[in-house]
Image (cartoon, rainbow, N blue to C red; front, side, top):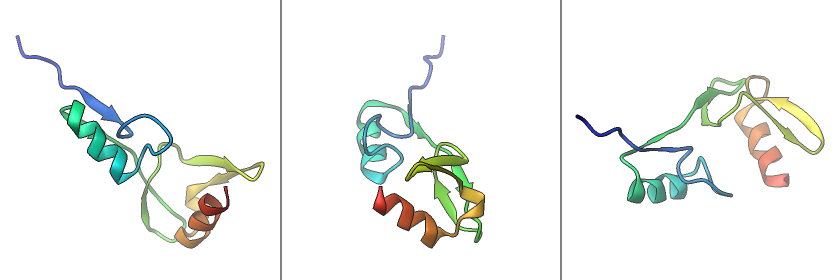
Length: 77
């Protein structure tokens, strides 16, 4: 019987999930990684679990933000 594969969901769980350091760490313990790719409003690919998120008390949809706007929101939070 074949053994199941172990995947690191969003890399390695914690503050830095969905980042290259989290993916590297997950690969030390797992067979692979799983992550979600989304499009921003200006057509850029980003790794983000959900299509929307909360910042500064408001909900934002990735598909309505440019990559520059997304960076500003994440840096301010």
